[in-house]
Image (tube, rainbow, N blue to C red; front, top):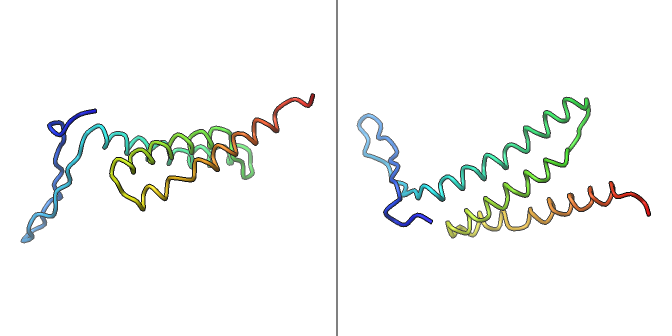
Length: 113
């Protein structure tokens, strides 16, 4: 993982007659991980919407649960890195639901023996 020398600073622009706002210290690796996690987690809604439109009814495809699982795990890693207890708790248990739905889908598709 990149060290402190790889961090970048993002400054919020100052408005006319205003002092600059705070600075954000960004490590490019963790910034990218967080953004990818958000993109993956958000993409599940687009996938579900498109699948429902195609089906003509509310429908949750299997890929929705995989995207949910992947996105939530990436966001959990990011939240742990940031040491943000609110963010960690928000992401800590969702994966259980996503994994359980994948198990239920697999069981429902298993041939009866």
